[in-house]
Image (cartoon, rainbow, N blue to C red; front, side, top):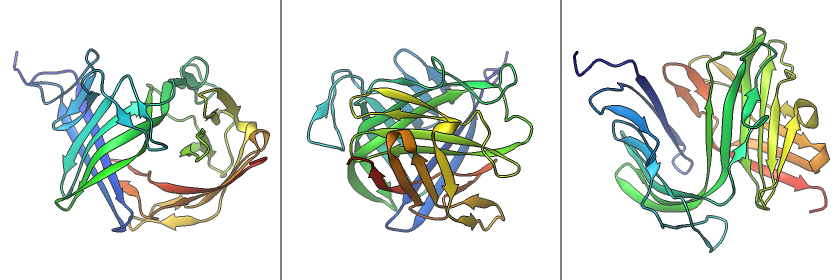
Length: 272
């Protein structure tokens, strides 16, 4: 058999928002899982497509958390990627336990049998390393969010897309919500979310527990129209938030087009 033969194909997306430079960079790779060109290994963790790679760093390391001076011991992930004028070399350390989304990690996306995904999150990781833009390296420190989701199903009939938010608030809490969007602009009942308190306590949110309203829209140069700016309320948590994109154009114009990018969150939590 040819050493090129494989049943595995890999696709990767790499994007970086340069807020100061008002530029959004997005790249895509396809590679076969042969000859070491791309692959995934569990122990030790290593996932790669060319020189884009996620894995575990040397054991025993620490990363200074972006929210304070303390270091976070335990597992440290490394994230390395370079393409065109930008590159990342980061170390990431979780400061909260893994969150299983949905019911024990099974997140239903519709009423049909099997229309679901397995989904877990690390909602707050300390991040430190180097971001390079146009040949200039910048030492960075902050927070990161890791989502892992996989499935074999597509959206239910009548659904045209989804609005997904991963928000880290300055009181140490984190909020994830996703709205499955119907053709008429309404919210499908299988929309859901999760609130993770500063101490790691998890509150599951159903579609009726929160309300999302787009405050504007943006049309890309390719003709796609996206919501742009939102109001998000979670009454039972006393949360009233405004979400605005850092740049309006954060569209990934790749094999399939979608908008995903950095946002600014403002608002209040009742009692704070």
